[in-house]
Image (cartoon, rainbow, N blue to C red; front, top):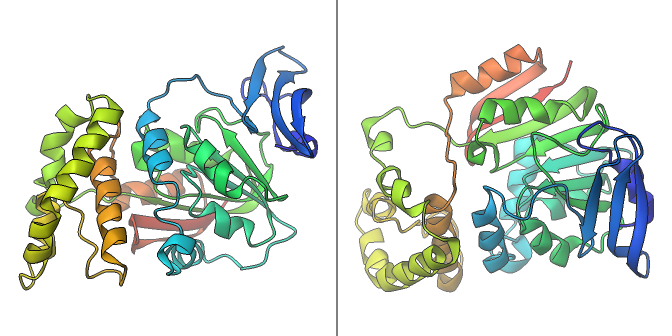
Length: 329
């Protein structure tokens, strides 16, 4: 972080201003230091350029490992296709230039959407509960208009009404209380500010309810993350030749692969085989490792926005299941 970014933060406990004490500065960036609350005396470390407002171990540790192993896997600069860029602007429907705006990203992972939010020239704060913030900082941390923070969605280190826009992609379903997490996103948002989210859709069909991961996760989510990742990556490598053959079965081939826990994007994106296999490893682990996996119905998502009295609500099935946009009252 940089010294001038302290004003973007507040104590997550009492929302008072934070004082900065610097231990190690590298040029304009603060590598190590402490943020101390001016009111309640709570203090929070800055480690490896990132302010930390969470304990060392969290329920999102699997994502820290996942995005360390696959820091660039989903980046457009790595795939050569504008997959994340298109998804960011189609899901948010926001302008491509927002230099006078402040944007909060909650659940940034390794930063596949951070890079596109920052490219709008807005002031961007990207937050994640896991150590994935380190991967994001490694790739995007030198941007002057970006602050990366490790914090809890239920207790974010910002004052109310600080941001013009908030978005959260790929995160809500992995929280213990999805509804509470959603409503937490609205706190830092200014009145008439814009919010965009997505969340996994709960399968209503028997086929969706019988997805293989639902039967395997009760065991795999309890395994240590590193051995589970090794198991997933070895499994995908072993099954990949068969998966390519199965994929060719008309109509049902890709579905069979997903039933076999081999995420199949072979028809979705024109990517090199090594990247498709890498995505399969990433998503196999992503399916089996999270402590929480709570898909929602579109009716439930609609009720959240209604309870919050949001305006201009748009809800539809999209990239990640259910996507929604609205304006805070």
